[in-house]
Structure formats: structure tokens, C-alpha cells
Image (cartoon, rainbow, N blue to C red; front, side):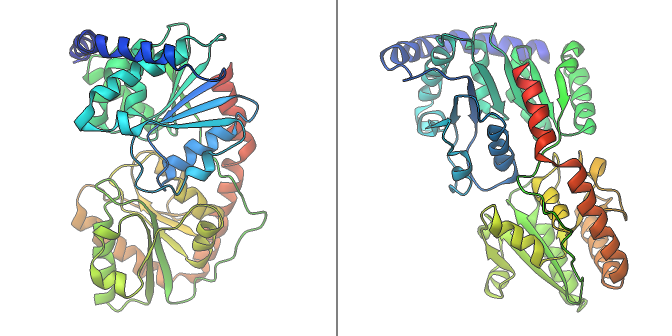
Length: 397
């Protein structure tokens, strides 16, 4: 399969050459106004954990001149303000790079961006935040320029995006050993050179703000259970809806609150009764949401290690989360959170979640202990200093 990836890349480069060449001519006529140390390529700035992590990476390089290219349409601008820093220039090129009706614009912008990068007086650094356009740009970049990548999670279908360009990426940053193992299996299956496994580096996410003291939840009844994030097939919010319905059918003393950009996935009754509270921006509004609720419930099919779990732990809320990817590397069942073992069978996962919720209702004192362990783990592992040091070391050295 790797040979097929390579052949595909060569054929595409031949076909797109006139468009890339045109892009370079355009860039020559409209050069950048200044030199940049780091070029970042991110999909967008919609409200989400991955977007927030991307923004926190930018803050690690406040002493560098940065330009960010956003390459996909964002459904909202909830995270945009996190990227708007004095040393940062933002370029939204999504009209050209994320428009199937003028796909040639995507090809032209590969020429534009590659010219900007290659023509810098000092060799810049390239950073790709799991961005399709960023991967496809790599063959057009001078080989002496270092290219780094953050992979938020492993998705086998996404192999068709990055697979053809793996040879051009110098560092692949991941958040857990289990993700590297998944990539190793993928490399073997697709006959990719195993030497590229040496390019992986593990760096945990960090939190912008860690409270100095443990926020003490009382875990009084009704127990407050919540979810915050995106919708879609990865997050499987429909399973949370099933869990809510089963808990209500059993008359369990629990309250649910759901926040995020998935109103179109919500049944009308959960909107009308206030279970769905709409979109919440990051920062203080999100911190208060963690404080007001007790148990973070997630039913994802796959993940990296979600930022929302980290924030919940920092504010003493207890994760009730699936056994996927890097989550069990951090969440120890019954110690600093709870793990849903069943992931693939959705009916069983719903039943397991309801069973766990029933146990939590009668375990008030134990929950207080677990809440403190969650907070302690967050304080010890998600600090700004450690995150900044590791990213600067990975990218600048």
C-alpha cells in the first residue's frame, strides 16, 4: 500500500504542477510583508479541544514571529481569539483550500504557501496540526526545512491523507504510547518503512489555567452529569441521549447538562427542558461549567486525550469515559475517574454507563476521594511549564 501512496503522490504532483507553478508566480507578485520564524497550518478555530491545544502551542513561542494559515471553514469563531496574539499573523485561506467547486484554488495555494516558505531569508519551521492541506504542501517545501506535526488521535481512514507524505515529516507529536502502537500496526499493515517510527515524540497536552486549590464538589443528589464538546460520529452524542432516557426511565436522581455545537443532534424535548444548554466558549465560562457539574460523561468511539477531560479533572469533576486510545493511560478506574470498558457494542456501552451511574449515586464519600485524585493528577501532569519546555525542545532544537 505504501508504494501505492507514493505512486499516487507522484501522479498528483505531475497533474497539479501548472497550478502550483501559477501559485508561485502569484506569490512572487504578492510577497509576504515580513519574515516569519514559524509557519503553522491548522484546519480552523471552531470551538473544540483540538483547536484549544493548537492555540496553546502558539503561546509556547511568544518570542517568535508566527504566521498561521487556517485551511478549512469554521462553523463558529469561538476559539479565534486565542490565536490573536501580538506576534501572530492570521491568514484564512479556506475559501480557496476548502471549496470543492474551485478545487484548483487548493492547488494554487500549495504554490503560494510553498513559495512563501522557501523564499524566507532564514529557514523557517513548519508545524502541521493534523491539517489535510498541510500534508499535501510538504512535497513542495525545501528539504532542508524542518516539518513537525501534531497528531491529536489515530484514525485509520486518515492514513490516506498523511500516508503519501510521511517521508517529509521530521517529527510526529502524539499524546500517548497507545497511539504510537496503533501507528506501528498501521505502518506494518501498509508496508511503510519502520524507520519512520523513530520520528514519534510523546508530549502531553497542558492547561492554560490550573486552580491553586481543589474545588470541592459535594456530589449531592441529584448527581450532576455533563458533556461538553462537539457532536458527530466520533463523539457519539446519541449514546449520551440514550443514557439520559434510560436514567429517566429508572427515575434515577441525576441531572444532565450537554453543551456544544451539536444542537441539530438534540431531540426537541432535551432542548426545551434545558438539558442542552448551547455552545460554551473556553475560559471562565467553561471553567464554571466544570464547577457546577460533578461527572463528565463521554461515549467517544475514538480519541487522543481530550482537553475537556483534563479541565474536568483540574476542577475536581470526575471523568466517566471510554476505554479508547490514550484515555486509559491517564484515567485509572476507581482512582482518578471511571472507565467504560465496552466501546464497540453501543447497546452494551449504554447499559454499562447506566450501571456505573447507579453505583455513583450511592458512593458520595468515595467520589470526594476520587475528585481529589483527579485534581492532583492534573496539577502534576498538565502544567504550562512542562508543556512549553517540551514543545520548544521538540520544534526549535
